[in-house]
Length: 573
Image 1: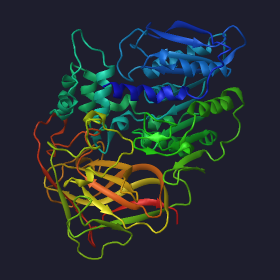
Image 2: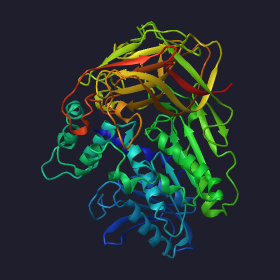
Image 3: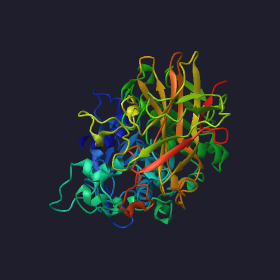
Image 4: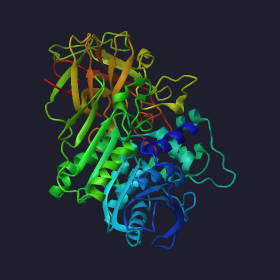
């Protein structure tokens, strides 16, 4: 549990590193309360010289204790800003009840409006922070408070549904662990530290009780797997294009918010109603997960010192331009992305970058692609004959783990970061397709997808697809992963059960990634039926979050002349 809480905090604590305040010039700090429209008082720390000339203001609104942002706030204050950090409603020193994201838009508006009226504010306000703290920026921004000039939402969402759900599967350990650390406990309630028991419990609708007490908002999130009216208040993606704000977006490929953050940039870059706003967007995309933004070591891979960036310094350059400067002109080459493998930074005008072509790599076998010792192969040649179908048994009572479980890494500590996949690839419920060693480098950048022809003998089933870089020493590095629940194959809003043994063409989104397979490395694709507990296991019954029954599914992947299952990489010619 401590590790989960650490990851949630670290995502924004990292922002304070590298822009150190001058120790010879201590920063003034004052704690006050700011009234919201309903009279609730939110505790707020103000850093900087408020008795001098009016200055631009940088605001962070956090549920994780405003005191933890002191280093970053002092650094920004030392750089010529008034830095303001506020405890969200119902958290730490602020009044009210905490219901995640419920009032962040309105409270953000009221706070920005209050700031603009202060004599020490020059009328120009920016917001910064990551994860939940990044989402408070989007929620405030769509309320259009007067004086909000720019935001820097790092590793966060504009669609809360897609914050939790991908392809119909929910990020179970993430939200259950977050609830266990952040939901208000009734008197006498005790957190259940047996996460194996909690995460394996059925029905899913009772997970909050397994955590240790009734958490209505957690139960609500887990019992609404469809994109329906339940999510409407926190579905902002269609609204953000109406904003006229410069924005800096930072995220890592291994971050569970990678798709959302990149899509936020793409939405603003391509669809913002104001042409000037389209030119005032920046995307920094690195090899990090949610807790390692700006670092070199991620999971079991060290990407080298060149992967290190100071995200606070990047924020500061951005804010100086739009809060201190006139902010005129476009952002030249607004995309900076890190290419894994060759470990270099590249620049582009848009995402996906230009100069790459969609290239298909096809799956082959004699029907025995199970495990990395099987007969599965991968190449650019489409099947021209009736190759034998591959199949595996997906057992919800023994779901394929996202990471190999060890004493040092128990089930709940499963990570999104790159870790060696070899132990998992020895499971019989994993299909493995591997290329020969590559004679020359293969470079790709963009959004990856897999197009599969599949069937199951059950009413529902999941297909998980991983792209893996097999190093010459055998280390199997996961580069990207996607999941699709069969019943959600056509719609997030209107799922429909599978017809047993019917062949369906499905598309699995593996998200944004840029990398290079080095000469001598092998490309690999793994396919299985679960990625547990990072995503909930499919019971395979189509009974949804209230179902208690499970069924073992026989899942099939077809690769013949009529059903050419393949993965699509945007490759440099």
